[in-house]
Amino acid sequence: MWINRRLLALSLGYFLVMLDTTIVTVALPSIGDRLGGDLSTLQWVADGYPVTFAAGLLTAGVLSDRFGGRRVFLGGLWAFAALSAACALATGPGVLIGLRALLGIAGALLVPSSLALIAAAHPAPENRARALGVWAALSGLGLVAGPVAGGLLTDAFGWPSVFLAAVPVALAAVALLGRPDRPAPPGNTGRRVDAAGQVTSGLALGFLTYGTIARHPIALLIAVVAIAGFVLRQRRAADPMLPSRMFADRTVGAGLAAGTLVNFGLSGVLFVLTLLFQRAHGWSPSTTGLAFLPLTVPTAVNPILTGRLVARWGPRRPAGAGFLLMAAGVVAQLAGGVPVALAGLFVLGCGVSLAIPALVAAVVGALPGDLAGVGSGALNAARQVGAVVGVAVLGALAAHTALIVTALVLLAGAALTAFLHSAHPADARRRSPATPSSRS
Image 1 (tube, rainbow, N blue to C red):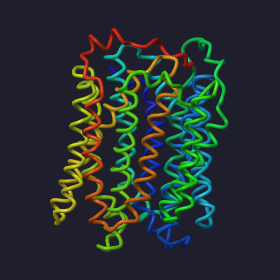
Image 2: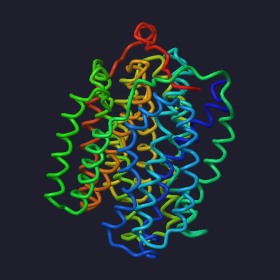
Image 3: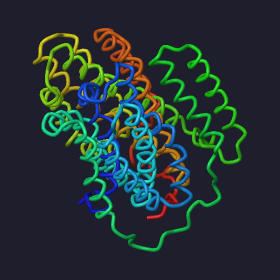
């Protein structure tokens, strides 16, 4: 009932974004062997994509609100297909990192536009929660299926195949989206791109990543200055990237913070375990990918269940339970032994499939309708900041220490969910925002 061509196409777009976040992880040792590069180079191959993705999401949200979600979504799909093919032809680590950075910009175009289109098609909170559950199930599968697919493809066809895999998926999404069913309503054409905000946010994220990976104090200082400049700009700009009225509801701020922590834990742990499995245990890419299979199983089904739970009970309890399960899954990696580690990965996957869809539903449901694009972009930017910092910080620590830090961060995320709405849908209907002005 809930899956149609339009929703499937929108879900495939985000599936691509999430797939590219993790499918490269298992291929990193092979990329290093073929193209050259030390640990910091491999960290940049992993982080080059989410850095620009996170930096571009807020502007992509403005573009979606201004020019229409469908137009921005289609442009992102075509760019993603072309740049993925180009990554497969990279001849050196520097070229690959640069192409990955451009790919992140293409991915940024896909997320706010897809969420805004879903919100426009499902204005009722219960229906929107269920549609977001389907969207999260299909797209979230890419996040955790990436290591499995990446390992099998790398062993069978070499590392370029992990990028080529995105091309047919992008083309399929273009075909499924089809033409709009009705004339597009006017876009929010009064909003303009905040160029100064984009520059300062991009500098902050780039220098934060570089400073953390290279342990460069001057770079970290520049990142702090850029963050301060971004905050000041948002207070004074006529069309800020993050309008202050977005945060009138405390759920938005808590959801953004929790989104940062959930991806810090997930992406950081995937990076740490990939290197541990292949370099410390001597596993092949395909064996490593298959070891992550228990992580993928719950994400194929659970987000649909999460959508129903959110529609019935609100997002607070599913999100909190998700964080606690993720923390438990990480702690299991410290116990030793393959069976316990695999069971822990399954628990981690259950937590991911609860936490992420619940956070998306919480933030989107608390936003004014005309900020659907920029608000969803802010949530995904926060999540990608967490992914970037997670890889940079945890990759610099010993595996045991990194896992302990991750478990503590996820427990902090569970505490943050106390600030999310826990309202029944009857109450949510009374707060329901207007239908977003994104074009269908």
